[in-house]
Length: 184
Image 1: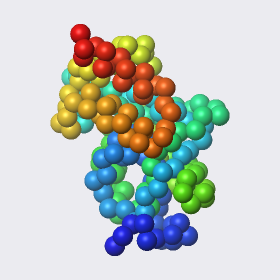
Image 2: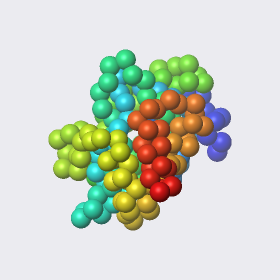
Image 3: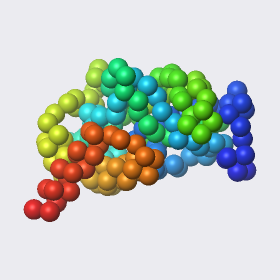
């Protein structure tokens, strides 16, 4: 079935999920519809530890979470999925993430829909929190886990965000530090 053949009105038979990190470029689950989308009031930050994908329990990598930021718009990708997809997504996003309900703005359809986002708050055991951008980039540059290098995660995300036309100073600054440090 062609995912784009379904209209947003059919969402009552499915669930919208908003992706702001690897869910933008690593789509390993079935979906009915995919659309560039945004949520308001949050910014993506590399403040979450990854013990299971981009790092190890002894040397966690750094992956994204959302932090509240008034007046900020976070651009990403929304997917209309069937309920059983959450078993896969819950396993994929298990390291400190919980589901939160958000309002998602679909760009092409120009509709707001209720949806789910995976959020890792500072009270979870994998939280690393803020740090200087150059230190976060060094941390990312040296981290590796079962899903590959943390460096690849950042570089693929930066490329995907540019393809969406997103402006994200945090991600692009980290990318710049990472690429500069690789040149030395």
